[in-house]
Amino acid sequence: MTHKEVRKKFISFYKGKRHVEIPSASLVPENDPTTLFTSSGMQPLVPYLLGEKHPSGTRIVNSQKCFRAQDIDEVGDNRHTTFFEMLGNWSLGDYFKENQLPWFFEFLTDELHLDPKRLYISVFEGNEFVPKDNESIKIWKELFSQVGIEAKEGERIFSYGVDKNWWSRSGTPDKMPPGEPGGPDSEVFYDFGIERKFHENSPWKNKPCHPNCECGRFLEIGNSVFMEYQKQQNGSFKELPQKNVDFGGGLERLVAATNDNPDMFQIDLFSTAIKTLEAITKTPSNYKIHPRPYRIISDHLRAAIFLVDSGVEPSNKLHGYVLRRLIRRAMIQARELGMMGDEWLSNAIPEFISQYSQIYPSVTKNTPEINQVITAEVDKFRKTIDRGLREFEKLKDNQLTGSTAFNLYQSYGFPLEIIKELYLQKGVTLNELEFSEAQKTHANLSRKVTSRLFKGGLVDQSEAVVKLHTATHLLQQALREVLGSHVRQKGSNITAERLRFDFTHPEKISNETIEKIEHLVNKKIDKNLTVSVEIVPLNKAIEEGALTVPGTTYPEQVKVYSIGNFSKEVCGGPHVDFTATIGSFKIVKEEGISQGVRRIYAKVSSDHVNTRKNHAQ
Image (tube, rainbow, N blue to C red):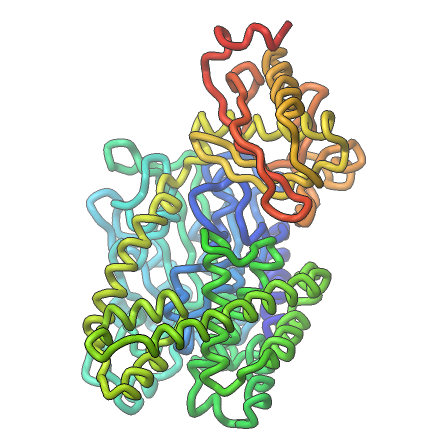
């Protein structure tokens, strides 16, 4: 089957079970400082898993664009990608295990026509806080018995601990912050055949085989998370007010299973682009001999397309650094295959864009910008590679250490294979152990730079963040009234300490004008305006003047938050009930970040009663 067929079948199947389809959320999350990218389908839905009412009801389904930066170094094997689509269905306090597991089994066997004999299951084995998932085991045994299969534990159904069959955004229970939701899960694996374990030089030949081993025989194709617990301050867990189902299945993996081919890069999404790359190198069967470079190029280029489409530009920080790394790593692999020019870009980019033109039309609309951003980065990196080679030529033999090699790898983007060849040209064998140690040290430091972004699960639900979130609504309307109606939100990021708001405006804002904007926001705060919410059709919200974020896809039913008669926006929440609880609003910085886009940093403080009497006068 093709990716279009599998995606369509999934959405249609769950619509038939009274689910409402919602659009994919942005790949770069709005108002969520806990993570750089949307990495799962549930990430934008956390408020609703905790009990907030979703505009589309209690049964929803979609295909969510996802990106996982932590998988970059894994790309090159037959199953890891950075960008992917997560097919998902959710029950928000509606049905539970008794419906979810039979429905997914039905989808796999009746809709995708997978042989039930090739399906294996994992469940949660239990711990001191949460019991073993015997209920799921019982349901799975019954489902398999209906197709004539005896599903014994340890043979077809396997129990694992929290590292395998527990899911939360933060990972295992010990890493979950207080307030974070999570729960046991049940995964389904597709068996590509025992012979996968015994391929030539396999290190797994003489080891026990089970769904979670790494021999290549099994591929996880779906995970039903039973989101029913919430972490407490003392480390224990209590049940959520509502029991939720959070299902995620990788589209690309499901397509690979329907084709009975464990190489995900042979599905239609990648195969055409890979054939194009082979044609450029004039080696039609080279992928079979040396697949790794083709996999890295095709994965990284597809991911880069979607990141640029989401507004990310290459830089040395955060989102931009990840994009830069993807483009440069793809370029190195292209050079390794002998593609020294830009033909791999100009030929492969259209192949990917055409695959997504119907489901994600923005990539077609933004094709000129996507081409320009990626090509500019390639041109820039070409100069970096040349500088790296010049620096290498300056090195003396006693300087050719593993640490030096890692510096070439990190600073100039040279892959290990090329570094080893360069060392050998000087008669030196690379100490790969030293290289690995330098790489580990760097990785540990990187985690301490970035770990803050992935902890604190519900920081966007804290009192401080809710106040700042509401303040962004006041700020946007104040900007529009002072600067003009051309002002529209381009992005935002909120932590407990400050808000960051990006907006369209062609020039620097004077200090006097900033004071006017700040004064207007504080004036509305002092009036203690009521913050109200209603759920209405999207077209009605727009007709009534509610602001939206340009480029964002919204569901048919949306939440509209109004602050008195001053501000009206389509937004998912949360917000304060009355503006006086926000506190004293202060703009601390204004700057330009790109052509026609400005950025404001602002804070609020609780001492507004004593410090801002003049604002109300």
